[in-house]
Image (tube, rainbow, N blue to C red):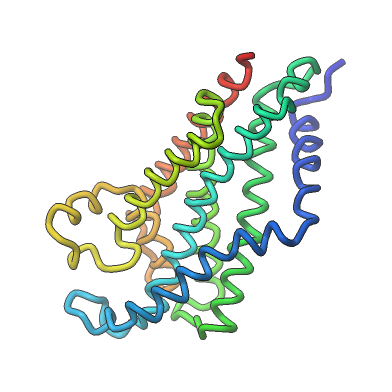
Length: 256
């Protein structure tokens, strides 16, 4: 008798987590967000004096929640890339010969990437506190709330990129699509400057950009002023993306 789906997910997740024993994976994944944090916190710190910037808010406190969210969003592309690699190296072909449901396979992949992102974001948050003096008004709980929201957003987007990987079955193409998608979403949002300070056409894009609502909600946690409408929008969109993405990914990996 085949094991239950929950057991299958647990076993497959444990198999993937063995890769986290190599600390180089975490270090390499931290390089880009640490570089972004260093550059933006130094180059754009005078933004705190610009018109339209929230009064009394340090630019680092404004920036760090956005770094958490954008880092979680970029990790979504790695989730798709990991599934594409499994398709390429024949791992999933072997799973098709076993009494394993494809939903369990993609769910385990999602849990693995959630764990990896959690370690990455927690390390990034601690580094920001120790090295840059990040101590926002929302305190540790507010910062952790921003981190959890970043994980939720990243998991929802990760399901979408896994679905894309299952259908295109090409890691290089997926990375190209991911870069072409994520950078406009990141910069056409409220991540680095207030939406009101953006050029008119870019402001119009930022207003409808789901990443703007995720950043605003995470920033609300960190600054101690929860943005409930933005939080509801971010959670709603992420939930829809997660359910739809996992379903499409499971259908895609069933194909030979």
